[in-house]
Length: 155
Image (cartoon, rainbow, N blue to C red):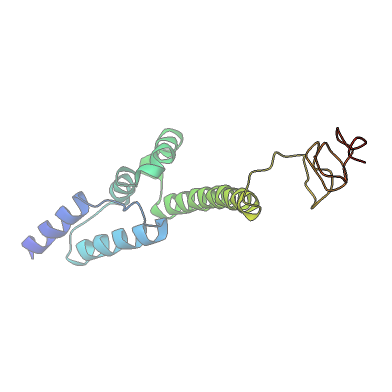
């Protein structure tokens, strides 16, 4: 039994949040380990678990962990409160990431739908208003239909 407790304590010591893992999944894994340790009769205090959570978060939570450590007394912070704060942050980050990716997809879809990039504020309709290029009715082409040089002399 002492060996099992040591193994679980080692698991807790090396416990880390994976980069692709959500807060809920991470905390569930941590609670499973702490419940096994408590089930074997070893006492584990909540501030110890809260500290472990803050130390083992993925790098994307670094600044949030620092803010929590600075603004709250870790010794009085419950695991539930910490999880709620981290989940609220995760929702916010995911929402801003979704907005950014949606904007990128919209911009990419607009530029690839015509095959070329269009400056904003300009609209191009088919066949009209294309500027000073040649058309079948106007311009300086050499055909008999236009008004270019030599039109009168060819008659």
